[in-house]
Length: 431
Image: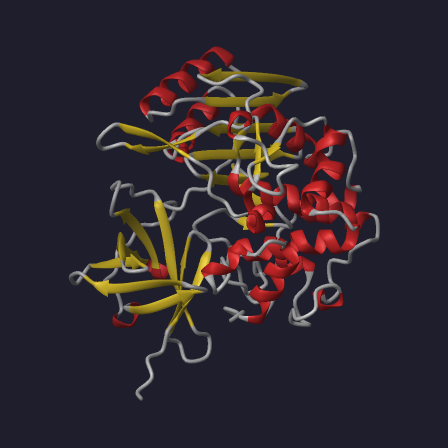
């Protein structure tokens, strides 16, 4: 592995993407390297949805101990939840749950228990449990409360007791009760970056405490690599080998189009040259973080950045890591897009995921325009298989993809999938 090349490219890309600070940690061939630009090695960066893998790992530790069952009805522990819904569904985003609660004001609830009860009362599932994949923050909030019920601890206490202390991690919580949430001085400040103007603006973390199990941790890249090595099978062994294998194995019908090549139990699955990697990506307010693990050889890689442009930086860094002798895997949504097609008429319409509305209209005979909650989001170019490339309305980025899905019954387009989230067509009724 060419470490000099890695630090040179990390430094160059950090500057090119206007990122104030970045951390890269790599464990490979029995050694760990850390590289930093503009941040201390131990600084805690808000890791966003990488928190979900921590929540999933706590749940799987409870499964290993016999305190939870992957396939028992959640209603055994969480009254009001559909009997068909299981922990396996929640961990793999196959429960048919919307991304977030139907009522946006519900995040003001003061406890996970109250939040979950309110959310499930108003729930409109996207599909039956196990029938498809739709990325859900709400599902991980349910897992967080399930952990509380099973342990008698708060989610924050359980994460600390089951993972942070045994692994020696110096992670922080960006939100939560006053006695556990870190102050602004204890976590890295995120930044909103406008690549077109070069403007870089500090932003504050805004996650509600009830959403903590889906995104409230802050950690260094070194912490993430330590955590990743455990998920790859290294000591300490906090989950039995069968449990780790389940986390890393693809779940049936978990097709995270636009995000990863597959999904396990709390882990995204990626492929490079026939080699399987697992991990997770996360964005918080003005931060972007990425974790990859190769269980076959024990390699773990983590990048943390304190800028909204960090995701684009990661995308540009991966080829450099490969060229430097570190063949880390990432998802390429543009792979396999070859033959443009004119959009079928039934691509247009309104689609909904929870409280979020996606509206698609025809721009001309070849392009569609997507708005999200009334705001311009992207232009869509359609390819074979109803897959589309997206051109971001704000940044012009063209690296994201999505797709339309047909109803297996009548053959009509029923769903749109963007960022792993399904949105179901809304049918207008005449009054």
